Length: 220
Image (cartoon, rainbow, N blue to C red; front, side, top):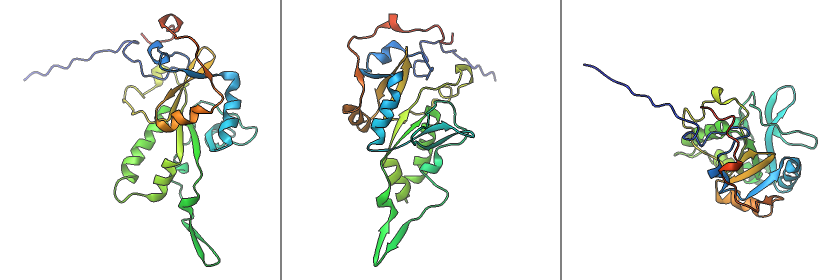
């Protein structure tokens, strides 16, 4: 018996969903009507912090996820540690007593926004398959419901990336796509769309076409 295997190498135009740090396919940009200048990113974060606990990668002793405080600088580099502890902590208080009243902590979970890369967001999909099936973990479920995911641009060189090779699932409420000094917003859910309604963002006044897209760094 003889077995024949045929492999097709994808071109740059076929791998249109990858997260190049500064290259965005023009067909995607046509659907992104809102953006912020890079200089306005901190203003956007201050807006989010008014109503949400904001979690993002920060470089201290190492790059790791943390709750953003005044003076922290969010970076889009790969964290050394996953964001799992914000959804499935190693230990937690389930309830507490105050006089004769018992209060469940599940009712006290804050609304949060987390900035994470596609691979980290895809990891949550794997946790969902385990913890959101019967019997459902109510504490994990509440954290997932109270958390909006903003997918950040990937800073890893394309040749070292495995996101598209493994066809990782999309899992975001908003996706930031970097293009010529701006962060364009791609909406992934109703919650993400609602968040943008009052956010300090700019609206694109003209439609972009293929001549605006720099493909010089796309893989061949």
